[in-house]
Amino acid sequence: MKIIQLNDYDQIVKFINNADYHTASYLYKLPQAHENVETAIRQAIDDPGVFAQVDEQNEIVMLIFAFKYEDNKYKVIGPFIDKKSELTTESFKILFETMAQSKPDTANFNFSFEENEQNYSSFMKSIQSSYSFTDYHLISTQDIGTVDNIQNITDYHPAYYRSFKKLHEHTFKHDVMTAAEIVNSLDEQHKLFVFMSEGLLKGYLYLQIYEKTKNAEIKYFSSHTDYRFMGIAFDLLSHALNFAFSNYDIDKTYFKIRNKNHTLVERFNELGFYINYEYKKFKYVAAHL
Image (tube, rainbow, N blue to C red; front, side, top):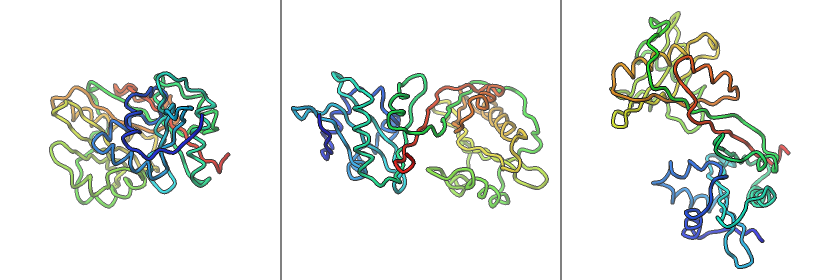
């Protein structure tokens, strides 16, 4: 067996389409980008490269690549395995480290796996990657019916823009809508609620309604660090649920939260949310080993 770098887009896609992907990191990144998947894979060919293990007949046995999201920061896609072959920790380690070693030691390679659905622990241990956090996807199918501190929650007003922008930019830093984009999107299907107290904007929540699919998404929500653990986020979430289910014909409301504390996330059960999916995130940086 040997490791080679692939440059033929059609060859790569053909193998992926027929491969076993049960142990693939960030698998959901491919269908999410289905319209732009060719562009994404072609960019991966250029940086960091598409690496494959091939047998004596130069047939692909295993393939791995990554999507670049910042300088020297990558989301690993794969490995994809030939269905007649078996993935071992050693073969995974050799293939991944070949890709990683083509970049500076300071490069970040990030992994994501669906908990309870994928096997990943032994592979992450073999390359000494570290656990970063978990992305929890939560869903609610009903309004709990009560909203505390409703007097503090109001619709967004342009006078709040400066405070909202500062809090949003402090909370969310990568791959997100800007404060201006959020404000410019506001209409009957895009709502921005703010929590005001003592003349200060202490929290906000941005809600998107998808009436065609009968869903609502809580895209962003946050409370100011000086006022955490005071129930502001829970009040905003309660209000969003009440608003969405009372004003639209929807079946569910959902949101994503990033955290390391599973017990803390389970507190959202009090609002009627339950964990639908959870993705474990890992990071590999050769310089940290």
